[in-house]
Image (spheres, rainbow, N blue to C red):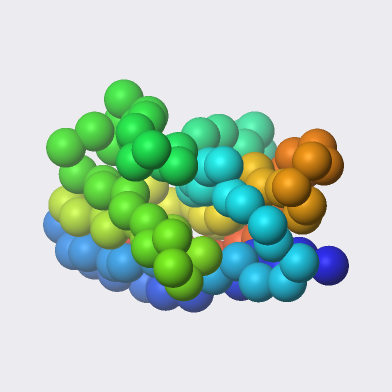
Length: 121
């Protein structure tokens, strides 16, 4: 059993900041990559940012220069620092992890339950 639990969402004014956290727990042998996705009402879930084991990162064009993803491997935790927030950043943000539960086993993709981020004045 693997669980991903997000925290840190909320209501913030335009131009403000939020920091999301996601902790992975359970039967984890190795985490290959972690990331954040967002889903706004009526839209598909889309990648916001991801970070691989080697610390290489990938960002959606819309958040480059404003959001920063980081990872604490010892704590199986990924963070998303969100600065200069805009109303169009409003969405449910989901944590994602690609991980293996054993040395020779396959990798699986897990999702958190989501945390709401609302940017409004």
